[in-house]
Image 1 (cartoon, rainbow, N blue to C red):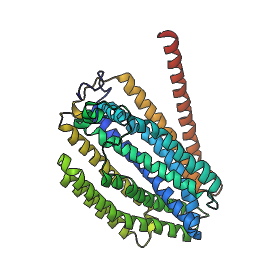
Image 2: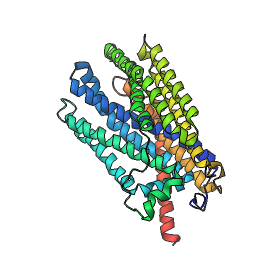
Image 3: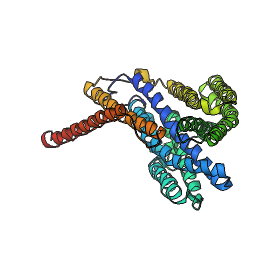
Image 4: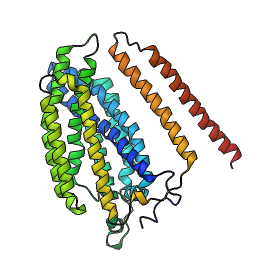
Length: 396
């Protein structure tokens, strides 16, 4: 059944390459998503406590939340496309079985973003008058994470699809039931990763802002310390709930020991890292983000191993996915990636350099690179317009 549900045209390139890209892009996506959950939670706590230092940092994190959400949405497009390419039977079946929530998901995210940005940040971040909007935003964004969790859990259990679609022989097309979930896995991947993403981000921001000529060293040292303390508290819980994940879902796929080892290594390793930064946590900012990125790579690979093993029971393997190399698609994907990465790199350069200078200026090299990147984007946009016109006028 799984083989028959695959795209009859096959993948346009080697499927294993798409699997590797799925892992890499998921790491970026999950960092921003969990970072948004973490920054939103902290801003609520800061405005509730009304401590001067907490309020000052809370205003920063209130601004960080919608930015993280936006980046999470943008970076989520790539792993979604790769899933649709090599795991299309799983993705579309899961969306059919949970159709109501997969469609509602879009509006849930829109609501969460709007409440965090339009109401709380723009209207209520100065005095916390609209703190309820931040709470509502956090609830909506967390619920969106729950929906994605359920979709993934449903997708890796194809042996139960028919019983869910037609329980007792009666077809159920409502798509409103949450058919599969694992609470320890959800807590491991969402709120606990949110705490660690936020901790690493705080340390990175402290290190970055410390380089400004108008930096406030005392406040930034305190901010880095807050990030370190959050990491120290959350890292052991991360390992514990990883173990619970191993003992709840692991036996189903014969991966209890594997998930348990990953959880122990991540929990102890992250705790040790944060513990060692007790003297100058602000100096470890860039290192903290790198260590956390490496941890997320381990989690991403673990997810892929679980998915591969769960589907291997039914002889479904990405390595055996049919493919016909479509050089036109490959070239368009490659060029689009180069253009996109160039534009994003330019934006990062501008943000980084302007943030360090007192007057917001950037180097001549960055401006030159920006002109090239912008020209590439314009040319690529024009190319797509011409392709559309040609298709509409001559390929009827």
